[in-house]
Length: 218
Image (cartoon, rainbow, N blue to C red; front, side, top):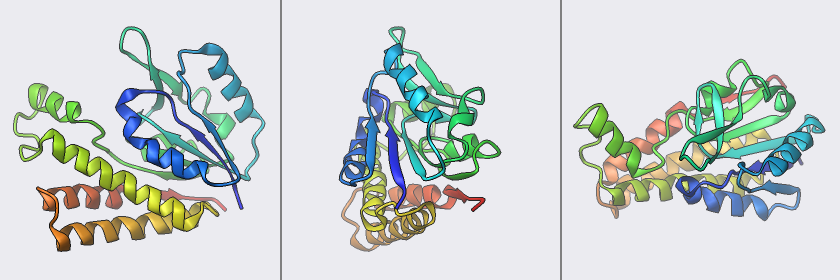
């Protein structure tokens, strides 16, 4: 069984991902790094640990991302700190990587050898409001803050179930279980109709599942 490391920078906007971290903690081969990345000594220690890893490890990253970087915590001015980019990604290149972050599949593409990555993820209602205010005023016009919270719960619950059932034995088993659980959650939303705007939330999960990317060289 693979050994697991989870990197989960402290950031209140990603607190909703905590059930994923807690599920990973139940696995005996798990080590977690949950801290404020403004603390240079802790961040430096993390980088040093990553330099020692071999290809037996699966690294989970929980947080914010972009196509060219993964973010750490927010600094005193409210700016997201960069935790990983092309200059320091080589230390995890030979591990297996699971990026539970926006555009993590783009970040991993052509940079990492074995990975599971996601596309766009709406992680906070403020993102919807920002797009409405500065982009498309009709963006997700159906969605309220409660709807985004419901989506978060369905998204996180799917990943928690996939971790629980696959036990993260390897990257392939986790990916297969993610695809299966997302499809089950979508079907359940459409059949049970227990949530307001269940169809739109199911569509969001469908997009998540459709953009989910898996690549391995092994």
